[in-house]
Length: 296
Image (cartoon, rainbow, N blue to C red; front, side, top):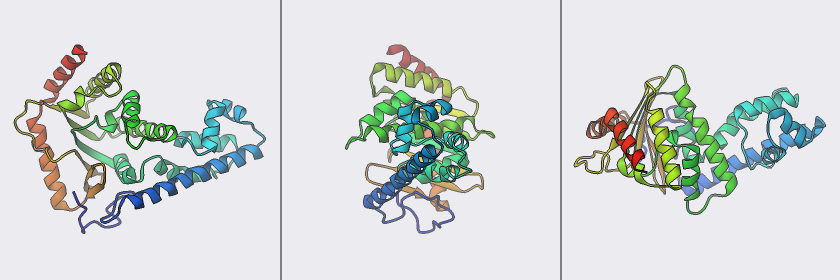
């Protein structure tokens, strides 16, 4: 899926690959994000030392261990926006640390996903079809760690921790008010892969059953025996923003794209409607997941 020339800077969130951008550009942007995290950590350490607090004392006041404070200062872990607010108050930074919140929040995502993460925060509707792994918004922490640990080349432990924290933060979408409409269709094979082992899959299936009980969430399964599947071209997500603007996001191992042209977004939404009609109904999907869970 290639980004259309009709996209403008004001239409597309920052962080989505522009036409012709390659992985080298992503690496440069990711390095810049790491620089932001490192600079925040140095500022935090300077303010802590100036306040005459050791890591243990600061950690006690924030509810963290000294090693976690060290990981913040050394740029190995990104604190949540709430933690940044708290440490700003504890150290009497007068907003100096709060100033970093937006950039720090952006830096916790890989650069190719930053724009999509921003869209999720303002979405009134999100439609997602997946054929490889459970959607990040639906993953348990254990499933996240299992999937991230399988990446090749391997991710370093600090990056995995940052990605896990970022994915968990994205799940705030389920508790947002007014509640967005969220629909997920996933291939049956996604639910059968035992990534992380039997117990990790069991926990993931239980989580799907609980999440599917929310009034604004629909989860459907595309069975292996289905003779028709309009999603054969691969996974994609359709997001509708509060202003009615639609986006279609897709990624694979080598590229990421965001469609913004009205023609392509309408077609993608229509394709998703066909996929939904070909899948098991939400009730049938719940029964299917329950049977699968019972077989583990």
